[in-house]
Length: 368
Image 1 (cartoon, rainbow, N blue to C red):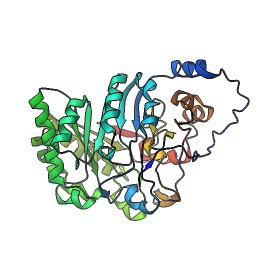
Image 2 (tube, rainbow, N blue to C red; image 1 turned 180 degrees about the horizontal axis):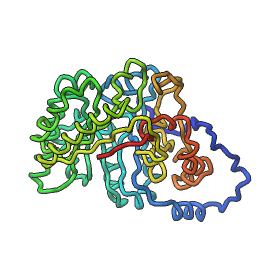
Image 3 (cartoon, one colour; image 1 turned 90 degrees about the vertical axis):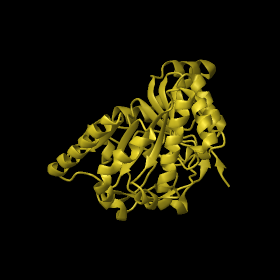
Image 4 (cartoon, one colour; image 1 turned 45 degrees about the vertical axis):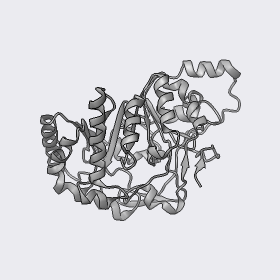
């Protein structure tokens, strides 16, 4: 049975906890209005519509934590509480630790977000995109769709069990063909390509494989959240400057090849031995809302599993969620402005939360 999202009091204490009981209340409607008016515009909001998935990717927390995984859908009621903030948000991305097209109300959520005035995107494994879904997707006004791949051909299918490489490329081609038939520009089509170390030898084939499908963008990422030690060797983190330069050259060659095919290619490459106060997840101007309604700085801060660990610096460490409030209990602007969340953002550079300290997304990086 799939659980509908409710806030269940699983907010986590943090170094930023303070007692707000004595804080004077403006009260009622005026406070809600004021919180909304004084909330800064967001660059993006990532909204997890479900934690259910029809695939079992070997590296995914849903697979490795399957015995304690919480399968649930975001309720339409909780989604609607976010609409007032969407008007001043550049992009809404409907995706988290699950397959968005499993949610029975996904297209209603897309319509509501578009009506609110923001751009809308999602990431999918592509296995549910038949001709009917593709048609509805194009007509929905969706702005961006990313298809996940991890490897080429059989390597993708072995790593992303439950998916099929040929069918994913077929779905991409079908979407591009439908756009041409309707003479529309959206959604833009991209591939979210997770590069594992063992798949490096195949990278020279990537652009040639994708170019005929009509894909417009490729975003290369690496395994940032490692759930168990036997996955550590797949983590593509340059250990020295020669390895960094080698990867940099590879990415740049791929980018030039992609440009010749009319494809934009982007990547994030971590510089060895460096740390930055910034983060690619942009916690000062972006946030993550999980399918249970809790608000976190990013998707890695609220994985729906209890009593689990992850690997940090080759050593296992207990995983602790970081949440700042639930949209079923208070408004998103009120959560954004509470003292704990303000404290987190203010001290992110000088005193980051433990989960953030050694995260590759916070290290100094070269982007393309």
